[in-house]
Amino acid sequence: MPESRSTDWAVEAHGLVKVFGDNRAVDGVDLSVRTGTVYGVLGPNGAGKTTTIRMLATLLKPDGGEATIFGHDVRREPQIVRQLIGVTGQYASVDETLSATENLVLFSRLNGLSRADARRRSSELLEEFGLSEAAKRPLKNFSGGMRRRLDLAASLISQPPLIFLDEPTTGLDPRTRAQMWDTIRRLVATGSTVLLTTQYLDEADQLADRIAVIDRGIVVAEGTADELKGSVGSASLLLRLADPASLERARQAILDVLHVDAVLSPEAGRITAPMSDPDSVTDLLIRLRTDGIAVAEIAVQQPTLDEVFLALTGHDTTAADAASGDPAGPGAELELEGAR
Ligand SMILES: Nc1ncnc2c1ncn2[C@@H]1O[C@H](COP(=O)(O)OP(=O)(O)O)[C@@H](O)[C@H]1O
Ligand SMILES: [Mg+2]
Image (tube, rainbow, N blue to C red; front, side):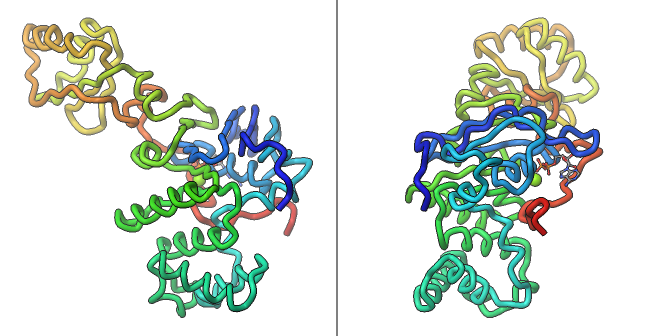
């Protein structure tokens, strides 16, 4: 293992840019990930998460900015950086006709394990990820969720100091997702640093020590989950109106009384707004009655990260950039630029 130059910071990136044609997919991203933590990059489809990871992992050349991994420059010292990181997605390049066990053994051998250790480690990992039954099946018959688990298992063989997980739980059922979360926590407890991307606010909330909210290639907010929630107010008002047609008038009432912009949710008749003073809800109710706006439901709660996202970007996390999409998709093969 190469000597680490900086032990405090697993990732330091400044002004990262990647342009595809006239699409500034990543448009000046700064990230600092402290060693030994889980860092969440949260954003909707097409926000630039995968592109950012690929640049940090030396799989894609930045068009601007710089990044270091444990102090090693991704552009000038890619070989050293590659020895310090694991990227899920790399596994898809292994032979599709081989079984899960054969793939893991191969991977273990490539990582320098003896034949016996490779066999033992592979069966441990397959057991841990609930893949023992499928161990003999060729990879080409694996579902997306099984691949994702095998992929993470593969990165656990060498357990590199920094692990990039690109949407590790997208599309997984709740039980498998919970298993993934446990595994990620264990990775960090045993000394790795994890940078994960996610579209799920609850995932970032549950796992990440710090979160960068990214939208259209730009970091729009950064902090702990609590800091992000606090940034939109100490509490959050949820209103459901009896008649969705009065949504606009309710928004105006909230603006007048609470002096904040409300967020109209896609769900009919629902409206949320950050509040600095939960007490002022009384004034709002009086105003709504005066205006003849009937309320079906009202609650004052802690702000959710969903609201943080809405407040920051004006749209929710499912609102993908219409022109984009995710050409590679989570867990898809990451190709080494210019190397094949
Ligand atoms: N290889 C590529 N060629 C052209 N455009 C790309 C490529 N990869 C990503 N993009 C575009 O860059 C933007 C960001 O994509 P991506 O980083 O995959 O977002 P995310 O991972 O957050 O969903 C999207 O608009 C996407 O269409
Ligand atoms: Mg992606």
